[in-house]
Length: 116
Image (cartoon, rainbow, N blue to C red):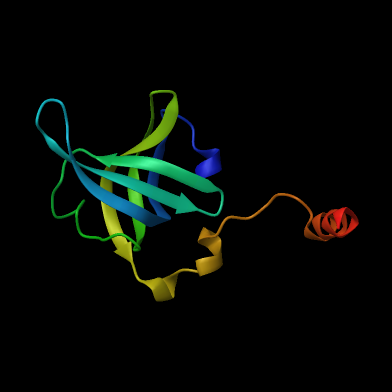
């Protein structure tokens, strides 16, 4: 889960949903992919510095298995991606990628009803 990521640790074949995929150019003139990935616990930026067939074989809105290292850049965690593989939609549970609350739903309903 993204919420559990810590800088300096690695991830292997972590299944995430690709919200966005953009081609960028570094200050040195090198191309890279800038990604925004999510699971039910949150969203994280990711960078693919070595663009090749094993890191550029997917599109926005794909589920992907990501391997790489969690790094800190400008006080925020991001993934430095080594490998990305498309995961077929029929092999994932869509609800695993939707935001959820840690709060008790019944208690939230009661609070909302009391406010109205």
